[in-house]
Image 1 (cartoon, one colour):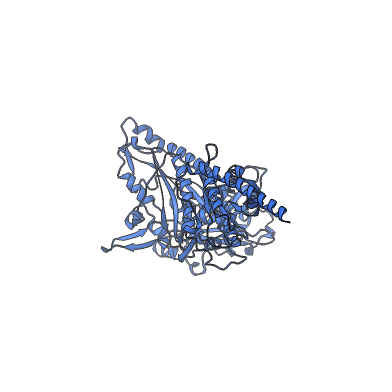
Image 2 (cartoon, rainbow, N blue to C red):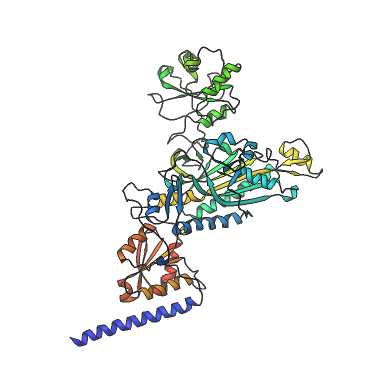
Length: 604
């Protein structure tokens, strides 16, 4: 009995000796290539827990349980070391793509003045969402939710000639918005991190070319996340301008609705999505007053009440909502920022002769005139007033208006073959061509030589003069929102799942008891890389916790790849490599480990 036992012990010693030689050979070459301190979880503050797990837990809950962040106040969060690593990687990725378009990074003040926002005519429009304060001299200030006024003023003070253009500047900074109902953690918060690129060009043509260049950089950025994304036509809203696109990550918890054609690729936010013009419904017997709904808006000068008449749910019509953008397309003076127009219009009733414009959906056009006596053209309290009425989209109109929001399965307006699909999505980026929306009120203009004035004035539709307002663009990416959105989209029942580009670490090395020294040598080898294999971003879990606890924690944190030193390593020098996203669980030889892991990471 003694001889077999000695033989087995001798074999084990031999295997261990060979393994030590392999590790020593690897570590010698590794040490020569890196002198950086090791990333270890024993020296990293990663407080776990903090929230009770539940079946309904969103990605935000897993960010808290995984030690990425903690809530400080409603809609405000503290970023912990793991969370900061994710944020830093998103920033570095953005730096790379901003440099590709020749942009320089700067940092603007968080505090802006109300006076600047008054000059740009935005203060009253966004006042409810502003955090406002005053200094000891009672000068009114705000915490900036966005920086168009500040950057325009800065550039206006430095521009001397058209030769200074183009200018491309960006920042990554904290912003503030007093959200009424913060929710879903980083997806709708009061304090958030954003990247803003501001561009300045001489002509509209040059600005549109810059817009295309930035759009290409944005597509490249989102492609590196290796997640499905949608680029949708969008409204410019309070930002101004007449060209904008949103960049969305599809998600069931998304607050936006995006329509997409399954044939030609037409994609738009449903607020601005066009639809095939509906044919008028000639079966007037099926239409009654109960089939008709009205939405009321008001003009920017507060003198015109706008009634939008559209079909509601019945046997004749499907359930859907009003497309306010379609109403604005019909009445350009509509102010979409006013929720309740009647108090404003009531003042107009007393001060002058008000008007009412009735905008009619094509499906109601044939019967609108015959039914108008039964319709509430004016609110009950105002029916006694004499008001001038006009109609857009009536039976005699050449234009067939579709005022109903697009529904899943509707025909595509851009092609004959396609049908539209509805997606819930999270907006994570937005590009705007602003034109002269800010350069005119804030005097961001350039001087031109007399020889250039006629050409530029003609291109821009300006009267020749000594100074020309610059054409601007604003292009944003929500850093905090991408952080929260990726966590939300890729999380599963076991925890988070980070793509390689923004993972806190690419690889976690987890040893079973008794293999601490070997795990350090493997860590060094993976980090150092080789002439043909770049080093990896690795963390070593050397905490004094059980192996099972470490594995559960690694699942919750969501490392793309986990390397385990366990039984297979002790027996034959094999490392177990796990990749949850790719459903990989495989034993790999030491000498093949870097290449094998890199192959997995390239897919993430």
